[in-house]
Picture 1 (cartoon, one colour):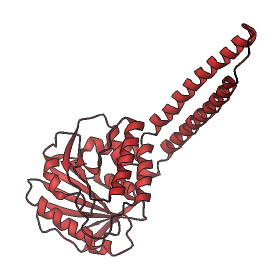
Picture 2 (spheres, helix red, strand yellow):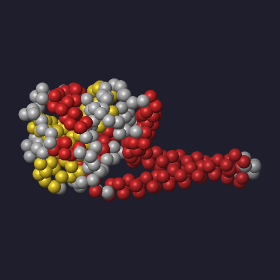
Picture 3 (cartoon, one colour):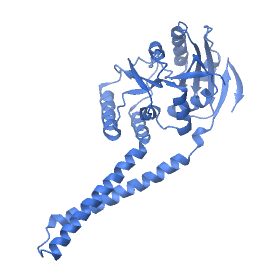
Picture 4 (spheres, one colour):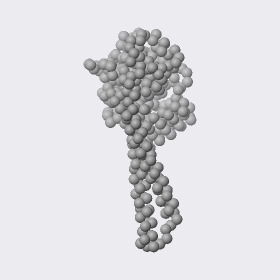
Length: 316
């Protein structure tokens, strides 16, 4: 398969966006029509139960350098898995670079020229200069970012909006990911960042509520599951060493100096035993969960029908 530097594939998941996705595509065309590339826009319809799919099938770009492909998922899988299905399709593309962005207008098309200025880089992430949510939501999001930094040692100041190379895209397909942005933060390759504001939705209410923010955070930590469970193993080792020291001290006082044992020492030993059991248990459970996740390959299966130019062309 020939690869060309001049074609860019844009992958955008979509669920029950109704006319919003059409407004987004129109705004996208206005920006892309002026750029010296050819673009394939891949809309991943996450089994919408409104008229989103019919609106997409009736939409056509007027610009000659832009084409539209619709992949319709057989059932709803969620935002991150929808991105993954887009990547599975994108393997067949002649593009060497891929842009991931949301279809509600919050990812500004105006940032795309800034992304394309760094096509020599494997990953270009878009960092938000400011957000439009409520103060409480921003507070919760800041707490999440602090926790992420403390637990993983990495900064999570970007989302799904990015430009990636084919190598990174194929790595994502091979390994899978519960959280795309967290997956990107783990990659050991050339990475750059550009700054762009988070725009207002083109209509309707944001789907990212507090419950989804919580699930979003949990999935980002899952990407670092091995590192997190390694912390429990280190905690187990430290607790075991302290426990051995305490037991040694008790034996020393009982059989060598024949002095009384302090009451707090017994409480400390019991506490350390409990911590050893907890850390060892969490580590063992973590190993089992990671093994099961690695063995689970269902996410690598295409679950979409391919629609292009308004007609269903292929069922996979």
